[in-house]
Amino acid sequence: MIEYVPYSGEPEAMNCPAAICDTCREQVVGEGNIVWCIRAGNKGEQRQQSPLFASHEGGCDCALGRWLEAQYPLDDNWINLSDEIDVFLKQLGNNVGRSFADDPRGDYHQVIVRMPTDPLQEQPR
Ligand SMILES: [Zn+2]
Image (cartoon, rainbow, N blue to C red; front, side):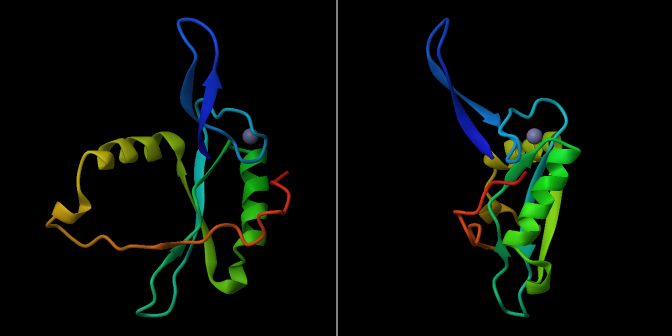
C-alpha cells in the first residue's frame, strides 16, 4: 500500500510517503505493481473495487495475486488488475490536479470500495 514511513535523522524527523510491498513489507523501489480487484455487477449495479495494493514484481506479485483471489473470488465475478507503479504514479499526479467533474469528454463513475473479506487472515506469503 501507499504508506507513510517514519524517518528519524538529519535534517529532521519526518514521515516519508512510499510504496510498501503488501507481500514482504519492504519498500518498492524501481519496478513494482499496483494491484487491485474489481467486480463488475449486473447492469445498473455500481462497480465494486478493492483497496489498492503494491508489490514487487515476480514472487511477491504472484503471492499477492493468490491472496487477492482468496479475498475477492473469481467465481464471485471479481478480477485482478494491475498497473506498473511508475505509470500509476504519473496518472495519479496528473489526476490530483484536475477535477473529473469538470471534464466534458466523458463520465467518471463512483465505485463501492470493499475491504478484504477477512481482515484477520494472514498477509500474502
Ligand atoms: Zn515484496
